[in-house]
Image (cartoon, rainbow, N blue to C red):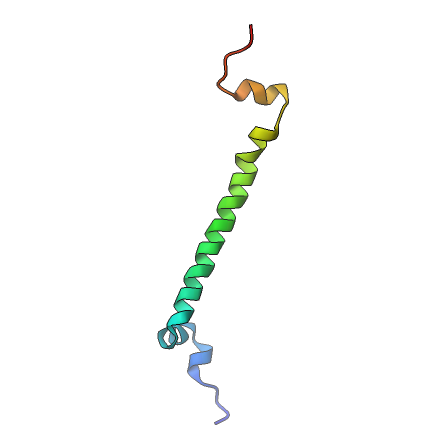
Length: 66
């Protein structure tokens, strides 16, 4: 009786016994991808809207003022 159950040691056995564990793993993977996408969006896309320097104005596709 002192030997622990293999279901608590092996992750595949736990997911085979408990279908909720597979859903939790899928949710964790989806959350991880969402967090990475939000961080990439904040790094690459957001600064363009907040920069008001002339260098950022040159990179936009608007024609130069005459």
